[in-house]
Amino acid sequence: MRKLLVCDVEGTIFRTRSKIDGVDYNSTMWQSIAEKLGDEGVRREKELHDRWERGEFDNYLDWVEATYIMHKELSLKKQIFDHLLLCAEYNLGVEEFFAKLNRKQFIPVLISGGFQELVRRAQHELNIPHGHGACEYTFDKSDGFLYSHSLVPCDFEGKYKYVEGLLDRYKLSKESDWVFIGDGKNDCDIAGKAPISFSFNGHPQLKELTNYNIDDRNGIHAGFGEISAILATLTEAHFRAGYDRNVKRKQKENIEKRSLNKAKATKNSKNEIEILDEDYTQPPKLHLSEILENYRIAFVGLREQYDAYRRLEDHFEKNFKLIEANFEHKNNADYKALKRRDFIFICVDCISHSQGWRIEDVGVPFAKIRRFPGQQNDVEPLERAMSNVLYRRYYESANP
Image 1: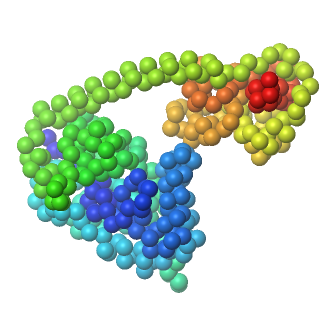
Image 2: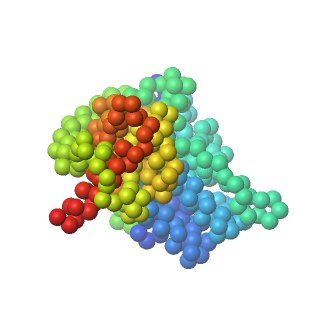
Image 3: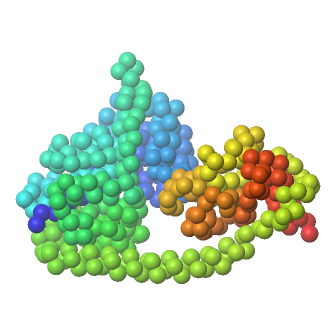
């Protein structure tokens, strides 16, 4: 049975050229570009990584988009970009590894959260049919400055989705017919799904998931020859054992997650602020607009059904955000946006029980708000209720 051999690119196929202090990711291109753009480039690259670690980007493509804007504002030129592409060096043994790879046994694939241009170079030089990168730059032909870009989901979960498509194309099993080789923390998701996985000078979190860890030792650089030697020993039993290992790890994670969710549910009960019937009718001590000067509020409901909440969002556009309730999972951008709010109002009339628990699991103080019969588009009762609840939460609690 043939297998896919899936390799990360920056830091795995190509050497890490630069690593800015304080940044938790290795890089062949991203950080090298920042250094070529001078002190301001390095400062802003570090700032973008810090923002990522703080959860300020909803997804990886938003981070890439912000990096593109930075490169454009600092006048990245094609000459610099092409020079860095040309100067990228392969890790030890990479060229020999792919030259000797048994193509009847393994179908090589490159997948990267970096530049398609670097992927394309490796495809051409290493004779690799499949390659997928997250970003591609276009430069102005007249002056050589960065002009535009294109993005595709190709990092974290996006890497596995690309691999899934290829497995389907070649009629291979997701459970037993592929190998992954990577180096970064962003490779953890895909490595945790691969039946056989290698880390190459890998991040500590990646090493916890991979079957084999290839590292520099005693001043001797790690090489792809070590991977080649291990691949030659693998049997179908090894791939099945790798899949079984992943299943057991996932089962253990699910047990731990259920235990954590129970603990969170207990904690979340302390985060809920009750809305009383009189909150909808009693004049507030502080107007909602005054409270929103200091706090960021989210309302979770269905945009197409509740005109009153749309009107509130339009009126208090600064810190009042309407987030639709029809998201599916915690990786959804709307769900992640909730984490950056100070308080959440959950409309109990238009969300499911499961969605309610996902929202409550964010860890942000919340209240369950409802509409009154015959008043579903009346703004005033909602505004009064929100004002009274927020006043109790942020003002009375601070000054008992």
